[in-house]
Image 1 (cartoon, one colour):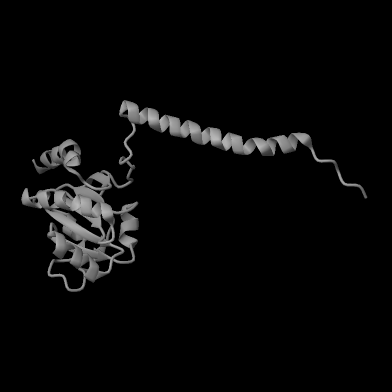
Image 2: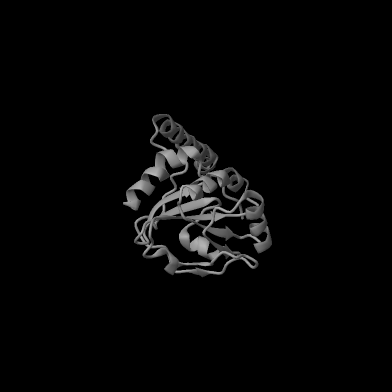
Length: 193
């Protein structure tokens, strides 16, 4: 029984697949760079399916040893003013960068509710003890299941909840002074009225 001769067209097609993939990746990268140049691409602007909706139902305990109240979805309805829900972790370097801005928001009277994401309670409380406590409520999401329901990609990540309990803004990454000036500050004013 004789073997069939290899098909030269099939071999060429298989060799061309990596070139096709590299070309597609190159076009995607070029589009991203072009968007950055024109201002139409925001690397922090990861879309959220929850914008304009109430947060998913949840109830989280406070970290063991915390004197702050826990956090549940029912705490996010009928608010006196908008609140910021901030997912953080003691092991998160960008959370350290963001922390002074959360402290500044607290001094301005913005309620910040913290959720310690996949963190040991002692570590989360130690993080707050060392850097200051910006949180009005503090919850522990050790397994990270509530964060998944919220659509959290990583920490830090923050959500602005209006007085009616609707998510109005989501920010993936550390909140900076520029973030507050350009995005969060105007939204706080808008939803406080």
